Amino acid sequence: MCRTAVQRVIDPVGPHRLTGKVVEGFKRGSKQLGWPTANLDPAAFESRFDASTEGVYVGWAAIRDPTLPEEAQAVHKAVLSMGWNPTYTDVKQRTVEAYLCHDFCGRDFYGAEMRLMICAFLRSNVKFDSFDELIQARCAFTAITDDVEFGQRALDGAELALLQRDPFFSSDTSAG
Ligand code: ADP
Ligand code: RBF
Ligand code: MG
Image (cartoon, rainbow, N blue to C red):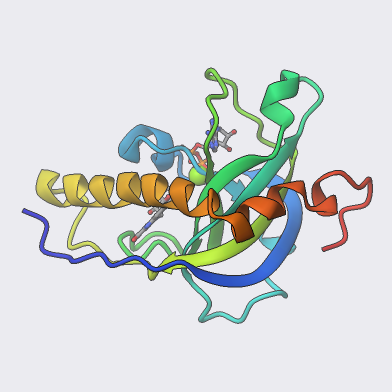
């Protein structure tokens, strides 16, 4: 049984427009959790938020990589985590990492530019007891799975849906 209650809200923020390269992490998103997360280069966000800013958010994201099929380069729904991955003790750097709601068919896109618009806060990051125990792993898995489902529905709301067509995603310059 999962003992950590997870409550979600849809609290509009910003929106915050961030542009940066997709960098490598610990490779746990896809392998351990079942949800790959494109990690944004810290240079793109470090000066934008103070160190206490954390949480699970929803937004929109686009990957610029001409080697990807056109539909893969569209503006996708994104459910993202910002913070210190409190469940893990080896994460020493704050991450902004986004699951893009699109099937990239096994392709990765490390080094590509990601434009990420953070639109609403869903919940705080939770420190799960331990990832070594199956019961906690299942608990966290369920939490992220529910975030993705809840987040996708939240982005269908009129106010957040409109932001998918923000000029940020179509302009040649990436100033946020
Ligand atoms: P890392 O720890 O290096 O971020 P992950 O296991 O989190 O590794 O996998 C993330 C990588 O998987 C991304 O950088 C990207 O190249 C790729 N990827 C494939 N599909 C997706 C997706 N739907 N959302 C985010 N990243 C994806
Ligand atoms: N990490 C945590 O330690 N606690 C969380 O509550 C948490 N929630 C997340 C929610 C979503 C939607 C995503 C995409 C990630 C979340 N993470 C959380 C980050 C997770 O630990 C990280 O993606 C993996 O460690 C792979 O980098
Ligand atoms: Mg990742």
